[in-house]
Image (tube, rainbow, N blue to C red):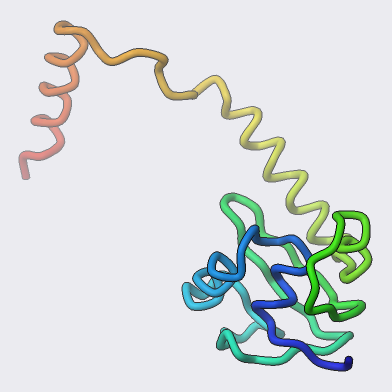
Length: 128
């Protein structure tokens, strides 16, 4: 097997839980092949460079092998290599998100006083 559909490969490599999620990500432009958007039916081969965006993370991976079958995580990890730049970029982004953790969402809804303060603030910025 030299080529396989990109949606099947993303599912087999365990980037997405289902082929439908992989298909939706491809159609949404979250998966690129060599910097270009692709269609779901596009076939990939070893050596192709993919950029996959999942939530906050963006990975650049090189396809090492192709598979149409979903296997264990350790086997799936052998299907691709993530570039060192991609790993470093994801780690920096994770650290930045962790540092911004102090600005996390509140644990409860605002009370009457806080709501009034928020309303005044919104009115202040809404007026042209």
